Image 1: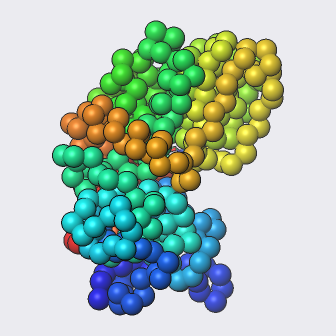
Image 2 (image 1 turned 90 degrees about the vertical axis):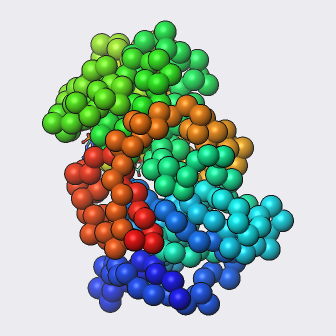
Length: 329
Ligand code: NDP
């Protein structure tokens, strides 16, 4: 038997979440690597799944948890053997395949990547999908030629998981980062991560003009909606916007003016189905280039049961940084 969070659908269509004991016989038959999960996380998507606020879960009942780190117990996959240390992010785990907010999971070996040498399971999950996505966004800006000398970088949703780690990464690389937040009370925290300046997200969240004063050489946006539209409208000639999230909304109420008059590039960033080589490159850079002391200030460690009670706080934008789940606690 193992401890897990289980989501099931009530008769009225709402989601019920409970901490329970499952039998190993209930692990998914289509996995080829059985793992002990030491740490997981509560990402925005996990919070949507646990609360049922959005149709993230597409198979019932479901164990949530799109992220996991721990040790392989048994494997029939050629790349993995008992004792190996793994990281899992995405691939529909916690959505259509039983996830990692549980002491055990049965995953596909093709989905797993090796935990970099010297990186603990807790550190891997302190980064989690949010941090790995922040790195994908930062790498996307670099790939488009945005350098630290190009100009200022805007990070929206700054006090959230993606935003906090994006600030730490980009400031660590020497960029001048401007953090946009709804929590001006967290200004000291955002500056300690490396933000040179903190602005009120209200400056970006209302409908704006299609072309605005040019300011940003690059943008990491985890918010979407009017915030993304305004960020694009304020991006300098030839600049790049990496869009990965929808905390404000799924809509994109913008015009083509910044693209056709300023050559602005809008790059979509997806972590869930990203190819393995891209994941390994991102995790290598996270292992070597993310300041561990900053990362420690971004996280709160919680026991498994609290993943249920804290999920609504994430959706309400009340959590600073990341919730890291000690699955065994
Ligand atoms: P968090 O909940 O940790 O952070 C989101 C932040 O967005 C909040 O902390 C808040 O920051 C800001 N925010 C919340 N509500 C609003 C609002 N109504 N208007 C404007 N800003 C708001 O989530 P994550 O950082 O983990 O994820 C951020 C987004 O990125 C989510 O939409 C998530 O689904 C998406 N995502 C996408 C991935 C991909 O593969 N494309 C992978 C990972 C995440 P503040 O108070 O500082 O303004």
